[in-house]
Image (tube, rainbow, N blue to C red; front, side):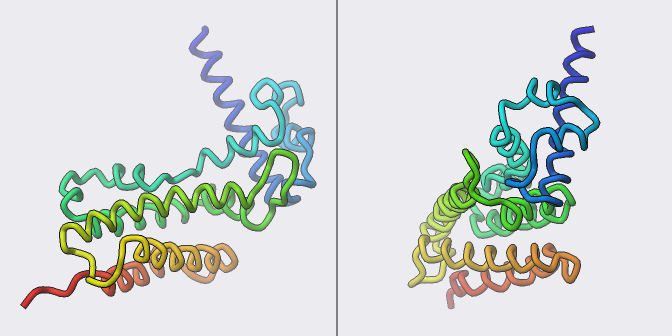
Length: 207
């Protein structure tokens, strides 16, 4: 019985997060009340407050479902040989990220964060975006640093500059896609741009 109750509680929590995604996307975060979210999920406010302290707590939980730490993406590839192939590790991790972004939930939540969220109470979308960007940039610097030590990174390009260049390209692609997600596949266009940029950064073959 206890197991069933725990399962049902988890299902209720997920249903509330699903409802929050839909209402936030339609009305914006600041203009959405917790009562509207509970009603959209066909639940009471009491059920919502059982799982979330306030709107900020719910918003952060919604974001957590689509977080993509770079190292997690690398580990998802599941190839131990990537330790010796850091540029390929970057490539495959980015492709995993593109695949996730094409899932409706990932697109919706990132659209909410970028286009439907204002600074409101304990919710600061710019701070959240900066945190994610800094986390990704730090991981990229580590991988490009490994590539430089192995002689895989083109001479004259520092790991820091390589990470900034790649992140700028990915950020531009991401924002273009969020505005026009029906016009192109981020996986298809992203693969082309990513392969091109990494090739330009790769150390030329010796001899």
